[in-house]
Structures are given as structure tokens and as C-alpha cells.
Image (cartoon, rainbow, N blue to C red; front, side):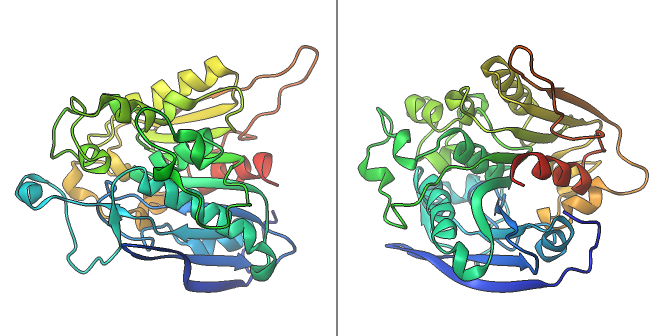
Length: 337
């Protein structure tokens, strides 16, 4: 990746990658004019129940700066039962016509988008051999799950059936990813409140006390293994929406499994990096600006790098830049270049 930020970017909007009973699912694709750029798949936040794939930090800019193709993908949002609408404290846009479903629909969609993007790499001009998933909040949960579970059907078990996990889109392609960038994602659903109006309960289709096995199976931390790809986490210590314990539990599990990982903890920062209460949250579209504002936010950085006997260590984030685009770029250079 060069330092030249004047790279032209070809933009493909509203590309349909899947048609479900609930409606069509699309993606927006930003491809820099360089030879064989690697691919980053962005999964938006919104508590699994709100927002759209437009909720992404300046994809055209970062496609150019990082010389990576960036695909921002839609997925079926969780449905809100009529009986619970008054109790759900979340901004719902009635104009948001994204199809809805119950987990594992969201995971099935993200994996389908990854496979579709691999199948169509030659047509759009990027290299999908190695793919990074990048997600924020609810999207961080789905990006992490895409990282720790290679094949969508591998999630089948007591909680979810193989029929729930059908590969209808580009079934012969791999849905695995080779790196994950996680912004304040939900890593352990067993940490969420046992409340039927909690977004996680809406995602799973019932509260934790009624669907305990599903909460465990849908948690990325459950599936961490030695085969998990490298992970870069960034999380605010004062996050009142997704407590930082999610990233700490995940980091410990990655370290225990021998997976290379880095964790940025931003001091005095809430969800989506705001310095005050959750009422200040705008969207992921401005999240990178909040990370890179002057002065640089106070932060602690922990990295775990594992090597074979007699080997040498290579940092995932060479030079340890502060949380922001430089850190992500260096991580991508180490993992998918």
C-alpha cells in the first residue's frame, strides 16, 4: 500500500448479492485503481435492528488510502415484535426497508456476501484470495463470527440446524476470512442482560434464559481456536452499550489459543468513541474522525504475538500507531497483502 492518496476508486452501488424470502440484499463496492487490491468486507453496526450499509466510515477514501477494495454489505436485521416495540430503546427508522430475520440469518448473509465477493472478484477487479472482515458493534459481532467460524454450516448444532445455515449463494466458494478488524463488537452474548427487549434478545429470538444454547453458540468467543485468523480490536473503556469486557474476554481467548491479536483500549471513550453519554452517538460514518481528532485520545495497546520455537516475532501493527486508519492499514498489510 502506497502513501499516495490520489488513487482513483471505482464505485459500484446497490449490487444485489442475495435474494431472500424477505427481500433482496445488496452491497456497495469501492475498488481502487491498482493491481489486484485485497478485499475488506465491512459489516455495519446498529444493534442488529437498525442502520444500513451506508453506516461505514468513508469507504471511498480508505479504499484509496489503503489500496484495498472495500465492500459494505447489508444483512437481514432483527425483527421487533409488535408487543415489544414500546420497550425497545433504540432509534428505528421507518424508512429503513432492509429485510428482517432471526439469527442465524444475519450470519448466513454475511457469509453469503463473502462468498459472492469471492465468486465475482475477477469481474470487479480485486483479489479475494485473502479477505479481511471489519465490523463495528453489532457488525463487529458478525465480523468476528465470520472470522472464528470458517464455513457457515459449521455453526450447526443443538441451537441451529443445517437448514438454518443453507449456502444458497456461491456455495462452492469459501466464506472464510484471513483477518478481522473489530470495533467494540459483541464477543460474548452470555454477558448481555436477560431482557426480552435487549437487542441481543431480538437478534436471537428470545431472552438468554429461554435460549441459552443459542446465546452461547452465537458468541464469537465460543469458537476461538488455533485456526482463528489474527484480530485487531479497538474499544472504549467507558463503553456503556457494549462493555469493554467483551474485547478483553475475546483477547484472552485469542491469546490462550495462540492467535496473534492486538487490543486498543481507548480511555474515557464511550460507544462509537464519543466522550460523553450515548446520546452523543451519531454513526460509524464519523467514527474515524473521532479516533483521529486532535489531541490523540489516551489509549492503552496490548499485543500478543505467537511464534514457533526458533522463530522470530512480527508485530501485527508495526510501529504501534494510535487507534485509527494507520493502525488498521498496518494490520491489513501484515494479514491480507
